[in-house]
Length: 177
Ligand code: ADP
Ligand code: MN
Image (cartoon, rainbow, N blue to C red):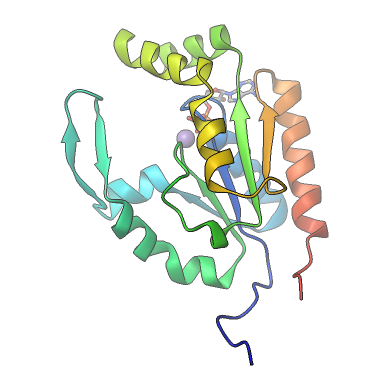
């Protein structure tokens, strides 16, 4: 008698973490290896105008969380999505079979963000966010214990291991009955 939605035939994965930890690089490689659909939420917010304007203090677009969730709902119901975003508390918990939080060494992260052309203040803010484990805590507060996995992404070797782990996980995933 339970017909509330259909089970997904492929898993949905969320890759989150402080900007610069390697979400997009990892997601692109895993998507290429598995056929999961890479959804870069930052890009989507820009291209579909899913924001409420520019925040001068934080130097970023203010994401419209409701609009983003509406835009994703059908895709997520289908399954097979790899969502890439530096926040995670506004997505419905039911969407994800796996939540990966990437972490990077503070010095490494600092250099990556400087290279990206971020202002000194924005670099500092993001590195502080990493030091305080903001996204890890947000993920643990928002998703079940068995769903959240924290992976290190400071070196190329770690990136390779993460690609391999996620690819294996996605390939062996089966719908739960
Ligand atoms: P995010 O999407 O989380 O902001 P990116 O995937 O854009 O991060 O990565 C930021 C930069 O750091 C890119 O130049 C990328 O090549 C590099 N990078 C990311 N992860 C690693 C890693 N594990 N080892 C070496 N370089 C990395
Ligand atoms: Mn990115």
